[in-house]
Length: 279
Figure 1 (spheres, rainbow, N blue to C red):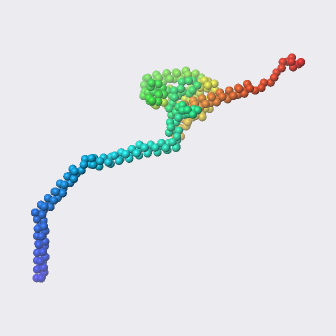
Figure 2: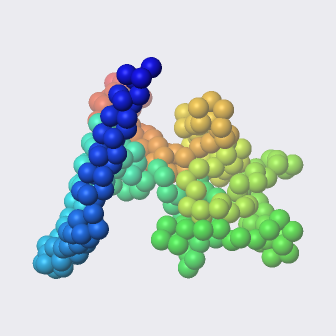
């Protein structure tokens, strides 16, 4: 027991000496010197930033924005349009080029934009409310008149009267197709309903000197079904139908002219008078 007490005293004295040594190291003078050095180091950092040239700092800040702008311009302004245009030209070139209709190698119309037909030998499209004239693709739009508007009611009545006047051979009691007396929302709708095409067959057949059966056959050949078999209603593209009628009339005229010329060129049997034959 007596031997252990001096050992404890020795260890206690050693710990006291260590604490004193640490206090000596962290004396006030040393602490002040350390704080001064730290303050000096931190005060030098703003100086370094102030010494950086303005143009270099501006370039460092603007570089990411410039790179991002150039990259997005290259991707969305050049690469993406070229890829989309290439795929469109490869998969559906006609639609990508505006669905242009050619006659004898010359563009005459588009199957996506209606035309204003007025002659009796052509099928007429829907009424158009575009200004300053019908089917003005540069000013596409509707009348914006509601179903209860008195002006719209008066306009529809006038269109019904005009439709019956220009189609006098339609059997009495035939329902008037709605699309033939109401304007479309775009004003340049290229299609009409099947009923709208059938309603005009007597007039077109009479004006072209064709039978109604022939004109009906041409109309039936140009009926387009519902989109994806579900959406919309069966329809007829007026531009394509009228082009087909012109082509048929031209072929029919050429065949008639050829047959007439062949009949005129055929040799005729010689006929002698009755008296000469008896002699």
